[in-house]
Structures are given as structure tokens and as C-alpha cells.
Image 1 (cartoon, rainbow, N blue to C red):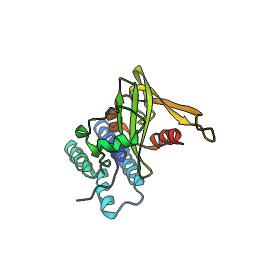
Image 2: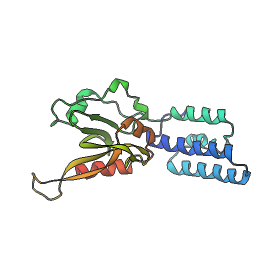
Image 3: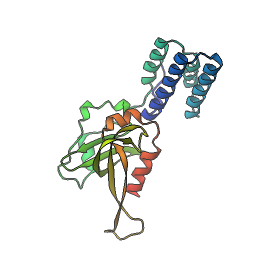
Image 4: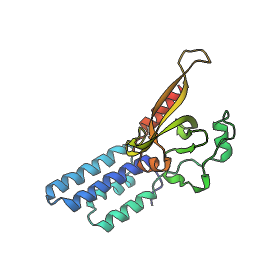
Length: 215
């Protein structure tokens, strides 16, 4: 068995690509088209892991051979085993990430499946705050922002899916400014971080937002 080697967002993307392949096999009669889609799917997955080991490559080489529904289901079930879990954190560690927040409302850590987390996100409706914790450049990092519910669906900037979103604004110290001079950055994000973690396939926007806040 392979040891875990992919992150949650990579797992989500592979799952989406393999799911599209299965759908096309079911709905497309032209075998040449199916063959092309098989190759494209395999290529996209392989390109995600340029440093893949031979064993990992052999696992991905099975993708173009999948045909029946039970084969796809078995492959995706096996895929889950190779996801690297989000680093375990304690309530005390979370409190240290937000030292200025009095009476910090904490997420239900015992209920989280850390294997399928790209980031930990939660809201405090009493203060209209959204908290995000992410392993940024190898360091556990936290940011907070105020959220304004839109009460409708929109495109989340983090996962790029159409979900219930809120407009999130976070305070940021302006570069080269005095200590008391702050700016703000904002964007639309999923109000349900669990759903966002299921959808996210790239961490670029998440990391950019956090770096904009942290400067």
C-alpha cells in the first residue's frame, strides 16, 4: 500500500476528474472520444505530481483502464487512503493563533475529519466573524475577518464553486505605513467551510488572501 502523499485539494481535483471520466463513459458512444478523454484525464493527474514515485505512477496508470461503475467506486475509495491529513491542532494552539480575540469561539475539533481538510474554518455568529487556520509555508497561521451574509448563492473565491457565500473583509496593515494605519481586503467565501473543503481544488486563492491580510 502507498503511504499518503496528496493533500485534500489534490484529492478533490482527482475525484472530480475521475468523476467526469465516468460520466463521459456512460454518456458518450464514440470510443475515440472516450479514449481521448481517458488520456486527457490521466495526463492532468500525472502533471499534478511531477515528483511522483514509480509506485504512485502505477496507481495513476490505472485511471485510463477504469470502465465499470464498481471499478470507479473502488478506485476512489482507495484514493482516500492516500490523502495526507491536516496537522492536528488543539484548542490551546488555536487560542494562541488569535491572542487578541477575547472569548474565542472554537470549532468542534473532535467532529472534524482532518484527512479531508485543506483549512480549518468556522464562524462566530455573535460577532459576525469568520476564522481561518491554514498551514501557510509550513507554519500554522490564523486570520480573522468579518462576514456579511448575502443570503444567496455565489462563487466562492477559495473553491470557485457556486455555494452559499458571505462577503468577508479582513483588516490588514498597509505596507510602509504607521503602526495604526490599516487597510482592508475582502472577497466572497463559502459560509460553510466544510462544504468549501469538499470543493476546493487549488490553494492559490486561499494563500493569496491570507498573505494579503498578513502582508
